[in-house]
Structure formats: C-alpha cells, structure tokens
Image (cartoon, rainbow, N blue to C red; front, side):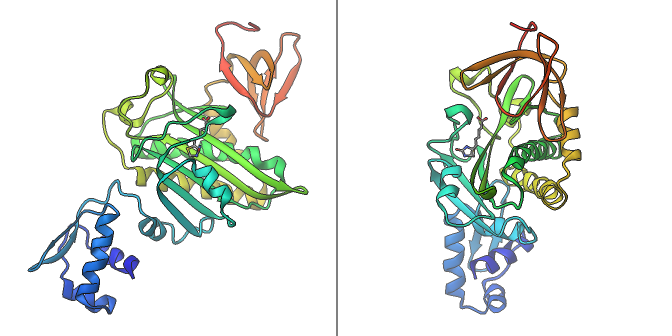
Length: 322
Ligand code: BTN
C-alpha cells in the first residue's frame, strides 16, 4: 500500500495531490494515507502537506529507499528484492548471511566496510553507493573473476553517463579518476562442487564525500571532489545496475564478455606500463601488455616470458623490473 501511495506521489512529483484523491485511488481512509505519508517522510522523502491542498512530493533525488528502488527495479530479471539498511557493518557480510540471492543490499553507511586484501573501506553515511549484488549465476566458479570485470565496466559506463567523466579502469577492480580511486569492487564467492552457491559483488563508489582522512587524501577521490557538484546516488546506482544486468545476462547465457573486456582494455590504466604484482607473499615485476578475453592480465617478465595473471594487487612502477 505504501508503495502504491509513493508511486502516485512520484507520478505527480512537484504537484499537489489531494488526500481525498489519494484515498479514493488507494481505497483506504484519509487517516491511513496520512500515516503512510508520515512513514515515507521518516524514510527521508520530502513531502509537503497542507489540509487544503493535500500532499506534494518534493525532491527525491538523493533518497534511497527499498520501496522506490523496488519500483525502479521492477523490470529487472536479475534483482527480485532490495534490502536497504541505515547502517551495517558490511553489505557483503549482510548479503552473505541471508539465505537467498538475486537481491540488492544497499546501506547508507557501513561501519566495517571491507576492501580487498583485508583493507577497510570507509563508507560515511549518505555519501556514497555502498552496495552488494547477491547472485546465484549458472556459471562455473572459474568465471567469477569475469563478474568483477563486468562490474568495473558497468561502473565506468554509469559514471560516464551521469557525469560525462571518463574514468580509468585499473585491473582487476578499481575505477580511478586521475590517479585516485573513486570506486572499488570486492567480489566474494561461496561455491560447492564446481557450482556457485552465492556470488557477492560488493561495489563502493565515493559519490559526495567532501574530505577523506589524511592517509587516503592522495589515493582516494569522490565525484564531488572531482566536479565540485553533488550527484544523485540513486541515479548512479540505477545506471550501474542497468549496465551490470545487461552485461551479466549476455555473459550468463552465452559466456561472451567481449564488449566488457574491450571497454576494460580501452580504459585500462595499466596496459603498456611497468607494474608490480603482489600475490600473497610473492612480488613480481613486468610489463602489462594485454588483457585477455577471460579477464586475465598478460604480463611480460624480465626473461621475456609472457604469463597470465588472474588475481593480485597491481601497482604501476616508474621502471621496469624494480
Ligand atoms: C577494494 O577496492 O578494495 C574493494 C572495496 C569494496 C567496497 C565495497 S562497499 C560495498 C561492499 N561492502 C563492503 O564491505 N565492501 C564492498
């Protein structure tokens, strides 16, 4: 019912709609309408109300709510439910503990946001997109790394559509503006006997963060810091999901990720550069020469050998082999 009332308010956004009109269309009393509107206001919707004119939905630009996201995602074949949390430790952890998949978990704030390699991911309230898409793809576990590439390409396309900015994609999971990180992706998997039980694609985008802790200032940025403007988290996340679903469906049904990999290649911040790769305790140096169609980074080592790297922490070096 609340969803139906929200839909009517959204359809008439910025216009007055009388309580009488709402109550007739929804088939509930005017006092019921008032209670639902109060609950929507508590969720952050700015709804003006006067006894003579009724209700008017003002700006919904940067409000995230389960109801509204469900409306926006009603045509999605990938996401059938949305969990919206005011605060959580980590959306990946929250999604992992649920006994279902094919859903979106999104939080206003994460108190224990996780990055790769055991790092933390700062996630201040209302200033970014902190979300996990929980899936059960019918692909072999070995294909999971490609989902990270799909997510990276989707975030790249979403940032371009929303802001016009052309970001860089740093294999395997970072999106950069200039040299600084604007988005990180943490893909985690639960698999058994060669089949994926749950794939958690955690995406963090720094949208309206004004200032970072000193230790991150030189390596992290936000859309706000890059443009001096605030951006709608809702629009950004819907764009990310639009592209993600498009690429994911093609990949799941045909195994094809060519378009995604072309985009990752075209906007790669590593190709042609000397790099260091850290994998566990192992450090390797080489020249990043190509990105393969299975998401692997091809690296030419000092002895001329060319090796595929499927995971690791990569940094660009000034010089080759040191
Ligand atoms: C990285 O760059 O190291 C990956 C960062 C991933 C951050 C996102 S925010 C939403 C999801 N929940 C988490 O705890 N982490 C991911």
